[in-house]
Image 1 (cartoon, rainbow, N blue to C red):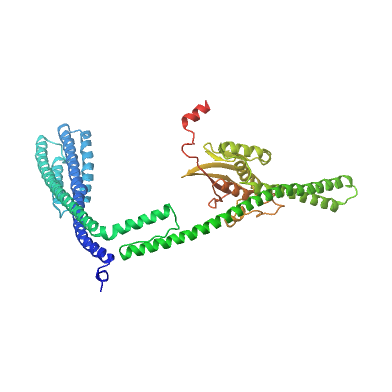
Image 2 (image 1 turned 135 degrees about the vertical axis):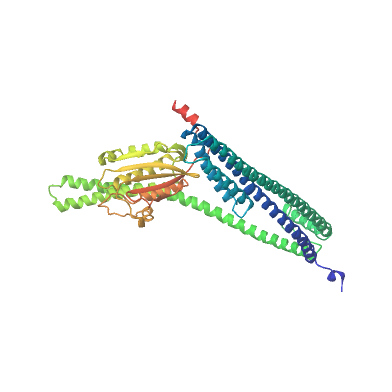
Length: 513
């Protein structure tokens, strides 16, 4: 049997040393925990009980002195207004006594017995000082004698609490010293264990690991295809084998990534060509589709004009249907083109004031606002944001336009506001219209989804879908607030400007000037 086969493996030595260290360290930590518990208990007694009790005892003494001052003035002058300090002191006494009870001054404890003695002496003094009959000099002298007894009880209470505080400080100092020594012992144990581990494992572990690390660095820096080998204990050799296996796997994954990158570049170029062709197709298709529609509309109107005397009511109705269908097809094509171009064509994002966006949107809706008698309320604190002006204006215009379109019998009242929520602004557009059933809260944002027939309300069903696409293009989200009881409330978010980009008050005042 060879020595290498009878020797302990590195794992067994490490386990033995770790076990011995864990036992010693566990004992030290247990002692430290006990010392820390004693320190915490002593601190709690001193800071949360004895100290506050002493403060309340002083407050009680002050309250009794105020009472004695008021009663002495009353006995000397027989004026009721001199009893005001007495009443105030009595309230302070009750409050201080209640606090002392809460802090542990119960009748079964020394602080509680001291408190009972003080309160009993105070009751005796008050009973003798405040009598139904007119006060006399003898009564004033008796009151002074009885209050001296109260002072003595207060002095006893204060002395006992001072002694308790001194004892608490001594306990706290003792616990602190014990904790200090335990921490020193723990530090010594850790240092000794570290030295033993360092000396015992340096030859068996550190040297082979350093050789292995050098081989790994050489392979990573020079040639990843160079094999990694190890020497020394069985565990280090196994680690070298695992590292070499990982090296080979990395080589395989790098080759796969290079192949995938080449495919991705090919598909990216193909996608760019496809997008370019799609944009060109959309442009050409829009013109090619709209030209026949314009001809259909023009010739139908020409037929109606020239042959109106030869057409009956049904014929004129058919021509009206054809013209209306062609016009709706033109609107639908324009809306689809606008929807498809969101995020692909447009201006550069710039910092803009949302108040100006709302003003532009309401100006575009000026005729319908006038016709419906609508009232638009815009909050004064709308914030600046970063985005494409035309797209964000379209969001406000669509939401306000829907509020005017789906109005109730009352004149429309639309409110635009915003509030800060963390790193984003939450905008709201609220109206008093016919409202939306909460079950359709998601359906209304799907393209071509309509909740009403075309005969009831005009439109193509693309507006809210476009709003969602624009808001998400700017890094926000939009939803229907289903908690509103009457009318409709749409909310959407936009990222807030960084603090460095927000104008300060001085700049705003200068701009205003």
